[in-house]
Image (cartoon, rainbow, N blue to C red; front, side, top):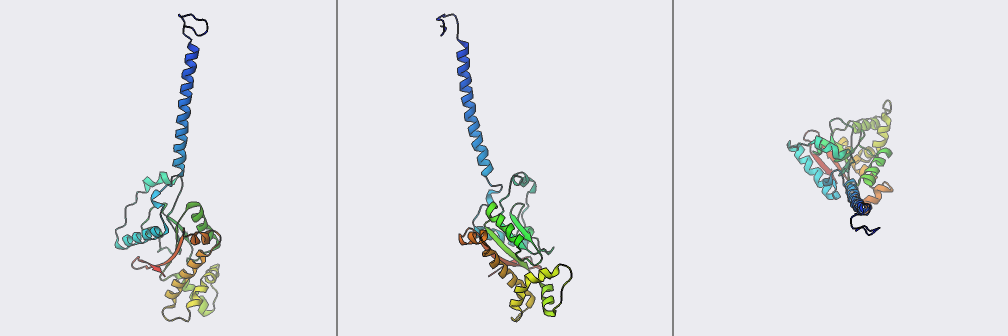
Length: 246
């Protein structure tokens, strides 16, 4: 029956079509809403979920990786499979302040993959303003829970600084800047027994750990809230072993 004229021989096609369209539109809206939520959840998902760990677990993971490196049983990392996820972002589980020495490679020494470590390198592994800012970014923007100051034995930068201070000489070029930054550690151990170079390397690590811990406002707040740990360690060139400095 026609809804407009009462004629039973006609069907009101426009009304049926309109109802069908409304159902289709409603279904599409629900579909778009679900898809939107899925995309939002995917965007929030960290590129490497396994890197969302506590500071203590992050340190355990670093040291376990170093043990594998020392024993020569490093894992095979599938760099190709990681590229797509890492192209969307990063969430490294540890930050490393390392010397620029070519014999020290944190990613190898801790047997880690791409996107695992946030590494800042400078000869003498001391915290500059730029380095501190870099770690602030890692902590605040990337939620990195651990920072390690990594010194190494036979450090040429520390050795040159010791010689410059003892002999009262000035190194060429911009090298005096290294001496200035490393000198507090050297002066603190000059009169102590034992090997001056080894003592200075360890003391340099200790001083820069403390410098990062109190770097306000971001790093110091993370340490205070126990969301970030800052530790020190020294790399042994001959064995590859990394020992924590306490």
